Image 1: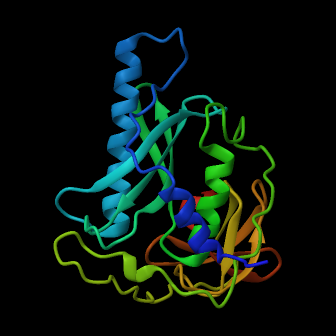
Image 2: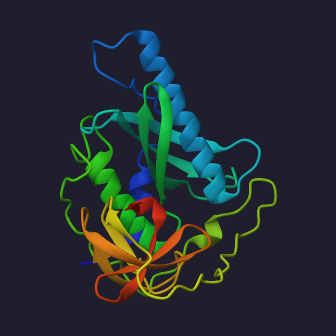
Image 3: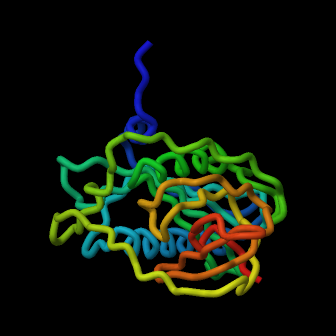
Length: 246
């Protein structure tokens, strides 16, 4: 039997839908049409902001198969789609999932997961299975989630796909200078199952997986929103988008 690398499998799964789907309405069937339209627009706006920041893209952002799915958790939607960072025919579309939380009709928080590297492809696959349908995701913030599978190793890195739409050059990831700290400086709860990495960037080796709802100590911070976490002693680094600090 021939096995397809996970990153390639996710890209193939995303490529199955060649047509751009119309965004789905957000909210219940009883919601007023004006409210539904406002929330859909807000969710798509925040998703595009997160995509541009992640990809460092300017100009028109080429997307397809974009759908908005109301989640089991109140005032939360998942925006699922595919984006071509350079907008070029010779570049693949990367699958993504953005989880948007609302305060009233205003999009207050957005967490983006995009399959731009092998470990991120693993995460996006889990998020797609868990969230890309109506009523997906946990029903509340304390819900226990299934652990993520270990990320595959030895596969090609897809960071060269992250090219600017204006420059069409690969974005090199620079390892930031770590902010040193002595002892415990705080605490955090894991908002969604998270990979703990050896370095404060997405290229750091995955040391272990922290399950959703886990309570961890914070030992240090690094530029880019990374936190050094653990229990009695530091384990490694987790991005702040996956944590709820306290």
